[in-house]
Length: 301
Image 1 (cartoon, rainbow, N blue to C red):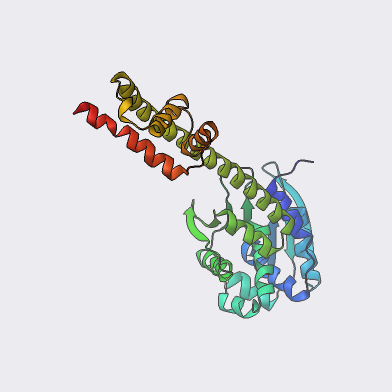
Image 2: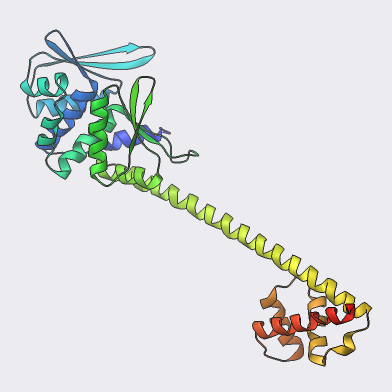
């Protein structure tokens, strides 16, 4: 089945097995990004039944609240509503107060920070296809303080994510292919990260071939232009019957140049050595060719 790369990444993340502490770290993100309080009830919204199951599983394996799950459709999309029917101090701190100092205390190891970012991406993240023209990964939230905190956690791992504002939302984003691949490895989407890197390598190889081809074309044009100028001078020497002013070796050199007008200096030197049974170097050949061509000045004078 052909699924989007974004969905593929999230499906891989949902399969990740985590410790109890890492479940709590994920819950921090789930609560902060997708949970609201209505009177005495906490409600978690998501359009993914798989993410809802992970949220409930994390709850049942940590603080064990009473939950009620409702699945419904809105605007043609499936929505999952998870009601938490009892209160919890941790929920109060995270959802209502956005106590990011407390977040720092709870996310006190690299593994917990990675787990937090995993749930951040599951809840509010998206990534375009690696086959798109541009690489792009983003996380969206309406809370500016939370956006800054997420940015700080991501950049803790030597990343360089940035924040922009889009329609009253704060968007934390990465556009560098290497940074996106690194982020996927961080949150545990290793298979998708490898898939992205394969595409990066493929594009780099194509770009490299194009660059090499362009360099080759440029060198060919340079060779042709240089040869054309040299042959124009050689034609003047022949028309002026001035070849007698050159030694036999220099006459052979300009003859070789005229008869091989598409060869570069390396190829021309090889051709000359084969025809005349010599072994002069490219530098020597080029020096003697220029010496022969300089006779044009004597013809003009």
